Length: 265
Image (cartoon, rainbow, N blue to C red):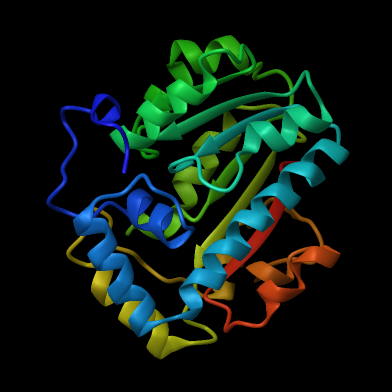
């Protein structure tokens, strides 16, 4: 549990938060009893959620490395969550010290912990905003200071768009329109394509939290990426997106999410 001095005064401890539930599932300590209770119920109904969450975090790091390999040095990590099991900026700056990362999240605890983590890092910052507040995110002093819109940016939306009930195509367009050609969109997203009963149980349990969820099919996600150049291997189960040798254990569970990386022409 976070130190009392690290708990924002406006934190809602009575209703579970998607970011804090995810943190508990990943083995983190930035969560409270309401989050843990919901996370345990989710894991009881769908045990593969834990493996999928680990696969999601591993995929994030693979996507960051792929973006670096394509020459991108700027990252906008939207819906970043609580920093558990590694972060985008650590992966990026380890390979490219000049990489710059802006995180975005609406969860107060994620922002508080992010600020503590980044206070001595001039190449990374966090913005507190709902991802649907696109203008607020892009006009933030921290975003404008770190990201040059004339150069490509990798917009990362990992495990967050399934908390947007309306089709997020316009949201994606607005973010990518703000940056130069060659910018990238990386995402992971809940799906019921492979385990409909388990995913229905997860969504039912999330319905009373601060962040109800929505599953989308492969066809729906491919539609969201229309007009972008979809990189290989396309929209695939998260653990199957460019797996590395150490990821074999993450490919044993029923897929509960898809991953994709696409480039703006």
